[in-house]
Length: 295
Ligand SMILES: Nc1ncnc2c1ncn2[C@@H]1O[C@H](COP(=O)(O)OP(=O)(O)O)[C@@H](O)[C@H]1O
Ligand SMILES: N[C@@H](CCOP(=O)(O)O)C(=O)O
Image 1 (cartoon, rainbow, N blue to C red):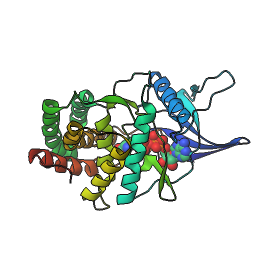
Image 2: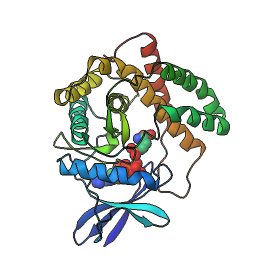
Image 3: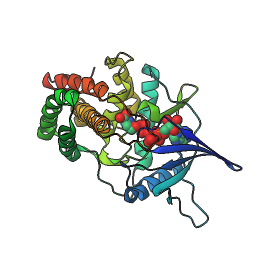
Image 4: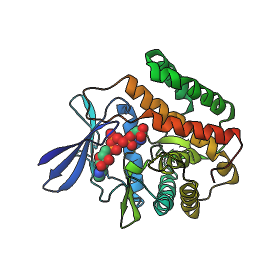
């Protein structure tokens, strides 16, 4: 058996695990994934796997338990998924990814678990406050635009839209491709009950910017087309997308800012730049002010 650390993670500590029966991933969960949330996540992955959505399959021990404890942290072994994520996904990849997200939403239908979104709208105010308390000069400059976006989101959040089990971290690094086709999705540790259109908005806010962080409307159009070819998207959901993209941009600006201000020195994780999403937040703020659509 060999264990090789994987350094790409942002949230948890991961190892590639090679045994006589195959290749797996061992995850030790760090601060954002509490043990009591994991049964929801594991059972959702099992349901998706059973419905042929390509996700890592949790591996149980001889007593049938997948969730274990290792080094004082919750731990899980899942199957290794083949395929590669894309660094700068183009229009076709965005269409494929939209279709992949719709497959995930389909596969999650009827799921019996319930987990409120730990990083949903109601968490953003307290997160902003804890960033404010620890703020350095750069964070102090950023906070007013975060708070202004938060006011808009609080005033206009579309609570009435359809909910279900969502991934809520459907970023390019969590989606695998093989021969240009969607081949799988990993990292379900933020999965929870949320607005389905918010899940799509997270994908739009993370896939539809180029290497210079410029919004690419054609990618957004393709992603929405890929999604809606497999799963209906109502007129109300479509109209709400710019506001929900603003919400997604606030969420990732805040968690990245929090991580920069409160680093975890002992975990095998990488920090990401909050400014990348803060710039997107400003763009979606202006788009919602002007009442414009994404394309
Ligand atoms: N089941 C899996 N199959 C293949 N690769 C995986 C799997 N799980 C994780 N990885 C690899 O590990 C990296 C980090 O995993 P991820 O779950 O995104 O960690 P974190 O939650 O810490 O961000 C991924 O980018 C991917 O390369
Ligand atoms: N996607 C989030 C943080 C979680 O990272 P992941 O590696 O688990 O996708 C971000 O980019 O801030």
